[in-house]
Length: 496
Image (cartoon, rainbow, N blue to C red; front, side, top):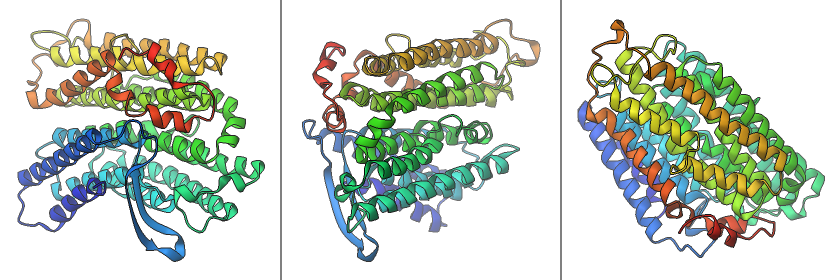
C-alpha cells in the first residue's frame, strides 16, 4: 500500500523514458496525472491513518541483501506523513508550472518524477541504508535539473550543490555504519539500532557527523553557501521543489536520526544547537536585507526559517517538536508560493533586480493580482496572524522559550527582520510609479496564477485552523520528546 507512493512516479519515469510514442504535451499530461494519483493516494493514507498510534503505520518489509543488512522496510508516522503529502503536492505544482515549450521534455519530466521517488523513499524508509540510497538518489536528478535547465552559471551552481551534498552523504553514511557496528546490530533496520549500548562520548561523535551532514542539506550557516547559487540559477519549478521539499530532508533527518537515535547526546548538545539556530536565523536575515535579487532574498529567507526548525528540535519537548514539524510544512508552502511569484515576475519583466523593478502593483499596466498574492506570501512569511507562518513560529517560540529563552528571543528578532527584507522587496518592486520600459507587461494567464492561489488558500486555511495539520503529528511528537513537557498544553494554544 505505502510502496505505491514510490512506484507510481517510478512507473512514469519508465513510461516517459522508453515511450517514444508520447508527444510533448502528452508527456506533461501523463506526469500530471501520475502525480495527481500519488497525491490522492497520500490523502487516502491520511484518512486511514490512526491518529492515536505514534509508531510507524502501513509498514512493509521485504528482505533484500541480508549480507549487507539492507532490507526494503518502509513505514509512515506523524513525522513523515505531512512531508510526504507536501512532496506530492509541490511536485504536482512544479510539473503544472513548467513551460509547455520546455526543451528536452522527456528527460525533464523523467527527472522531476525520479526526484519525487527519491524524496518520498527517504521519508518512508525504515532501514538506515535504504534511507541513504534514496538520499543519494536525489542528487542525480536535481543536479541535472539545475545544470541543464538553469541560468547562465547553472554548471557552477549545480557542481557546487553536488559537492556539498556528496560530503553530506559521506558523513551520514559514516555515521550510520558506526551506529550499526558499534551498537552491535545485525542489520541497518531503524528499529534495531542499539544506540543505548554506545558510550556517550562516542554518541556525541556520531551525532556530530549527522549534524554536519544534515546541516549541509538544511542548510545551516555556515554550511549554506550552495543554496543561494542553486536557487538563482535553477528554474522556477526546480526552486519550488528545492526550497519546499528538498531542504526538509535535512530537518527530517535531524529529527528522525539525530534526536530519534541519540536523545542523550542530543540533550548534551541542545544548548549549542539552539545557539546555532539563533545564529543561522540572524545571519541569514541580515544577509537577505543586503540583497537586490528577489530570488536571493527568498533563498536567504529559507535559510533563516529553517533555523526555527532546529530551535524547536533543540528544545526537545512535545510542543517544540510538534512545532518543528509544523514549521517544515509551513515553510514548504510559503517558500514555494514566493518562488512561484518571483518566477512569474521574471517571466513577464525579464528581471528580478530590485534596482530595476518598480510599480508592478499598477492595476492597469502592471501585475496587480501577482502583487496581491506576493503581499499575502510576505504576510505569511513575516508571521502575520491568520497565516500558517504565524502559527508555526508561535508554537516554536512557545515550546522553546522555557528551555532556551535567550536563543528564542534572538530568533524572535529574526522574525522582525523577515518583515524588513520582505517589505523592502515589496516596496521596491511593487509600489511606486511603473516606468515606461515596464509598462504594458504581457498578460498573466490563469494557468500562471492558479498554483500560487492554491498555496495561498492552504496558507490561510492552516493559519485559521492549524489542527487540520497538527493532529496528524501529535502522538509522534510525544514519542520523540524525551522530556516531560506534555502535549496536552497544546490544547490551550491551538483552537481545535
